[in-house]
Length: 269
Image (tube, rainbow, N blue to C red):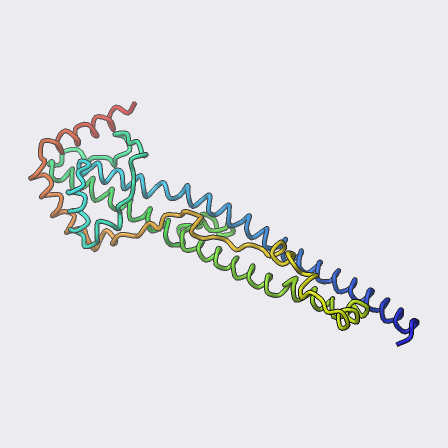
């Protein structure tokens, strides 16, 4: 091949290479900008969900206090309504409760009526808090045009969708594939390597690792998988029976607890 022909091919190769690299860069970094925006949205939802997760834990702490913080009785409560105690074996030691955090107590009721009523109300609020945290319900949207409030299911779906997008971008814009194709257009270099031999991947060594986008580590988000207990209407009779047993076993302690809560509601500090 003559020198003039070689120069023409070389210039053509350089122009085509430059054009392809520009197009690839535009597409790659455009996709990366979209991913960065998706990550920012996910981070906001994760932060909101962590805050939202405090409510079911607080209601769980109230329920534990109503069974006098006795682990064996709390285990008996879960067994009574048909779920394993380990499902709600969560640390609530960091939650400080005030007597005013308990539901209102109806005046004039018997001790059994007061205690059963306050336990049922607490359980109902725990169920609603867990349900809102775990699943996206219509109640999670305050206004028609507003974005829905976060929930565990939604955040996991968002993280998985983001990871699918990242995998797609990494596969589509693999720098190794792109640069190996550019290398094939480099007539002078290709001719030299045909004669002298070359190192495979010399253009792409290290670039693929540097430019690949890391997926979201879902486990590192550390979001508690708070379960949803049975709906209150399906276990009300079982809860009432448990409350009767609880009064029989701890009447004096429950009487003192009810009096203290009533006093706090009448004279909040």
